[in-house]
Length: 305
Image 1 (cartoon, rainbow, N blue to C red):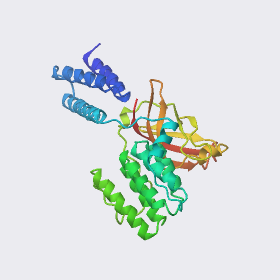
Image 2 (image 1 turned 60 degrees about the horizontal axis):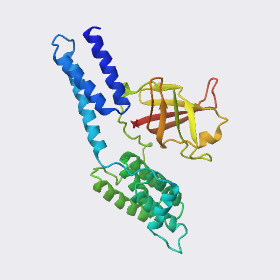
Image 3 (image 1 turned 90 degrees about the vertical axis):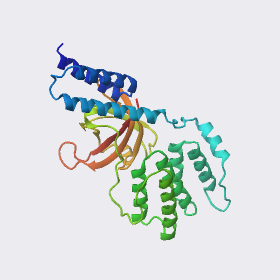
Image 4 (image 1 turned 180 degrees about the horizontal axis):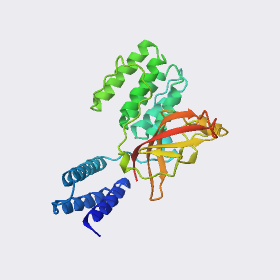
């Protein structure tokens, strides 16, 4: 095998390690490639190759530092979550749902954000609780580093006048405090509604394997929480597209732009891996044999394993 072919093969192997979350193995392979290129001065585009590999190694080292930071609390059983909720009280006999608010706050304190977000979103329906629910809901998203998504949510409340001006001001004040505590500089006051802001992806387009199918839990609708699997009809880098037949109304109603799809599984001929997805668009197909069916675009935010 000639030198260039070996470098290409080793680079492909390093990229596969990287996509699978095998960071130590990927760094070792990139370092070996770097040494091989440095030892051969007659390689074409040697400088740009070394720069690309150095960038990959630096990226992986940063990711390893993030991973070595305190890990998020593990998922716990329903019984354990119930116990957590009972440890904190926010119970006002005059306010329906207040005990549920206390339970949701407790779940968030223990890092059980998915369940907390689910309950806090439901509690936005109660006029007497919605300010506290909104404040804690924004905190949950910021704690998970979904800053732009939290901003988008606040913009939606403002545009739709979900809160009276005095209540919106309270929510805004809390939001600014939470952002400052997280070390985030972001102008919120006076921001008008934009289309739902997509979270940034940690993945480069060229690093995504070909994906043939995906599986995730429905975030809403009558079948909320059910694990469903779809074939991928089209892929462009970090974006994949699925199509749902018009007869599957429960599935279509359970998916809407802005949904975060956690623990989504991606199936590739080379590997199976999981991560986080963001539902970026939902469109009815208006022509052709699939007219009336719905097309959904999912952006891959990160890959966990």
